[in-house]
Amino acid sequence: MSGAGVPEPLVSPITGPADDLATVAASLRADWRADESEWMHEAARRWTHARGMGDVLVDYAARGDRVSIDVAGFTFEGAVTAVGDDRIDLDAHGALVTIRTALGGTGGKVAAPIVVRRTLRARRGGRRVPPALVTFAARLRELEVDARPVRLGLAFPPREMVGEVVVGADHVIVRGIDEAVIPLAWVAYVVASSDVPS
Image (cartoon, rainbow, N blue to C red; front, side):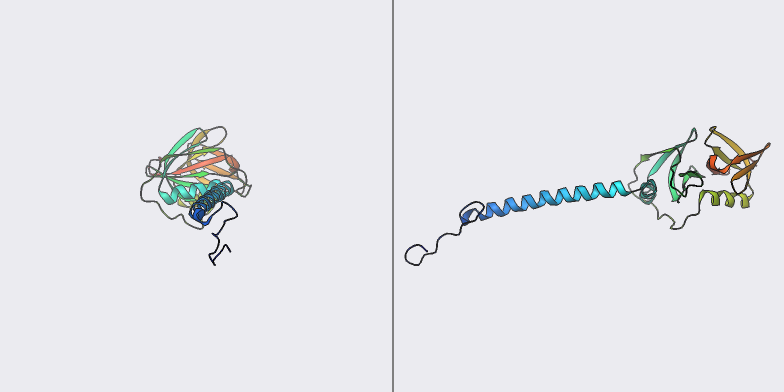
């Protein structure tokens, strides 16, 4: 204490007299905001790195975005209607296109050779993606039960076959003009639409 009972001014160990506390507080808040921003950026980066392709496709469906998918030499454009472990369903101008997103027999672990581009970011709409979607092979079996012609795309060589499908353990038989047996692993997509000739 300095003479006559008057206390000494408070001194901050950082800057000096207490008059500078407002400046110190502002500086600390700015440091805290910068630190928080850095942590938020890092958390977003980690979240992005942990996401799989299916997560991104589910986001596209939830927002109602339009996408373009290149697969087996063909391009399909439309809205994502469902995403499964090894498939994505696309409403392509009234045709339901089911595209394989993982190679057969890998349990969804090896990505199929496709390219997905978002062509239009939706401003409204979107849909909730079904929680339990069947596999690509199960979709082929659904189409077999329907007993109507489909367009079946092959990954290699890139081509389409038209006909009714019969699904075996590791192959698909396409009964159209002729009968073709195709290893299930090489089927890249299937299109069910009213424009497939009967």
